[in-house]
Length: 463
Image (cartoon, rainbow, N blue to C red; front, side, top):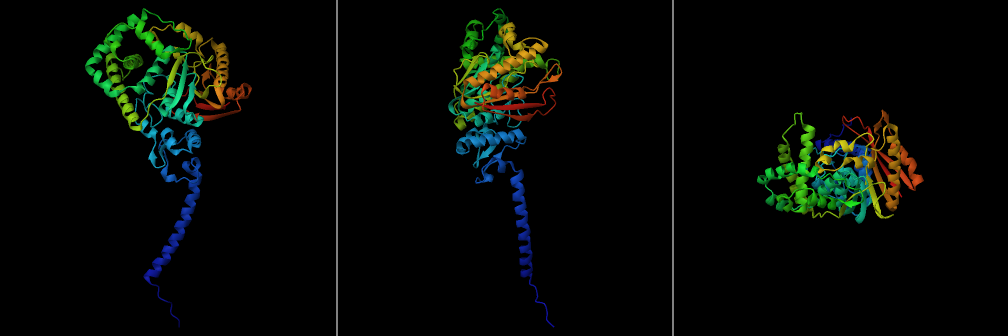
């Protein structure tokens, strides 16, 4: 009778190990296949790149963000070090932290993750601004670099210009509202302020006198009502005029130009806070808001100065112009890319929202209401005029763009007279008539409790 050969413990472990290795291999193959299907990096990056050396920001999860991350990567994938300096959505590139990782750590009021309110984006509470991170990615996709010019013909509070100058691209903003020209110029100039010098010269003991100066200047300013003509004026010249002929003489005028402008903006921010938070649980005295904002602005200045020094960032040239998007003060085929968002004035009264600011500066709003896109006319005529002006503005964008250049237009489906508009569809229809060779909309859902907009669209139009 043959006996079975005894099985040693070693043989048993070897056979079980072999079985486990096969199972692990099968599991690994399944995970590899699945990873390729659902891992965003496998879709965004080229196959030969080691994925462990790249990482998106943890809050990048919406489809439009992943689309933009791929678009910016495709533009700069042949120069990964430059991509690391410019990327909006990558936390790590080629094993090193991106510049946006450090820049977005210079936090401001209301910042959400790495998307908005960093650097000077949060200076002055302007309604209707868009996310800096998204704009940075769009500029990257456009491929604007160094001496290329990025244009925002509906500049608002300057988001496009802040992003362009920070990544090293020239920029220009056109805005018909003189108050917003002033705000944008100050936010941009603040990126260049030498914080240690500012801190040493302006301490808390000066704040009471500074606040009193701006508070008492209100009467002086309103005696000099200012009907600023929108004839392509440089915002720096407007600020020069403001200090020279509208503000009373004081020690404040002895501060460097950028410093006194920043102090003015802090005062205007406090004025906005005081106006809109009165009667709420966040109510404070006007002076308290000024003190609070001075401290918070100072922290942003400090963070910006230290981060730019660490990363060796020197803001690139920018220009803020008081003018009209319907008649751009630029030669044809002079702009690499346009990144903008037309005003939703048919549904949102921008003049009314910033009336405290306009009134303080003594700016006559009658002319502004007659010229601002979306505020002209009444009821259905208002919508018709808005459509005409939007088409005219897109034609102007086409004119100033260089061949192969892109216009990226951010707009929402606003409600007018109970009817939801669809200017995205209209612009797509106009695009070939105007001369654009490509036009594609990217959909971005609006999350949260603001029901006036369900979606925003980023329309990409190529000349």
